[in-house]
Image 1 (cartoon, rainbow, N blue to C red):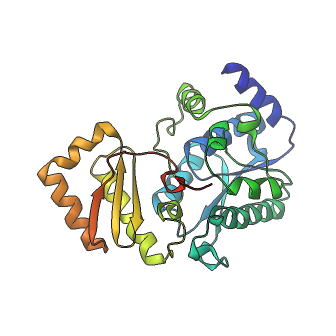
Image 2: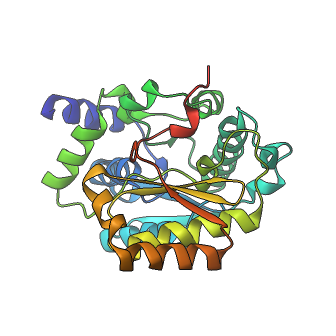
Length: 266
């Protein structure tokens, strides 16, 4: 693991200046802080503000940059304006990522920075991720993958370095909560955002609220499922979700897993 970290640092030393696509998540936070440790003020964090990202993610990203004194700019992007995106095709992630990478690269160039990096790790290749092509087409670097770092190693190194994100919940954009082909709307994105925030406020550690029409399918860690059986918790969740606009609320017995909406996708 230490050898991989040394490899990452050596790779980052090659760049006079570097912009990092920074969401505030575990991977991009580790990449940003490592780049800052290597390059100092020659690093810029670029964060996308969008309806598909919860406000808490934007707030936490800003707090992280303030904490470490890293310069940050925020670019507003409305993915719902991307042709075809709201229809939620199987290449939705590609359409979104292409627009995001274009916006981040453009923002970096406005600051005189030619190189942009993002936080994919080697584990990301194990799932269906059409957005990876958009990263490559935009010429954006993936230093964590190049160094061979896994998600577990990134968390471990983040903990060693005292980063507050080391045990942060894994997060993917709210668009991943929809079945491919189901129309996305701002209303439904807001419903999902509020529902997941409610579960986090109730103390659940890692959750997803997948939407199927007007049904909410909750994915939670196996060790947390028993809490859903408590009458006060169950009734609170059901009542609140219905207030948000859901008709039915279900608990997925398979539990939390990344890419569940990709199951069956070839």
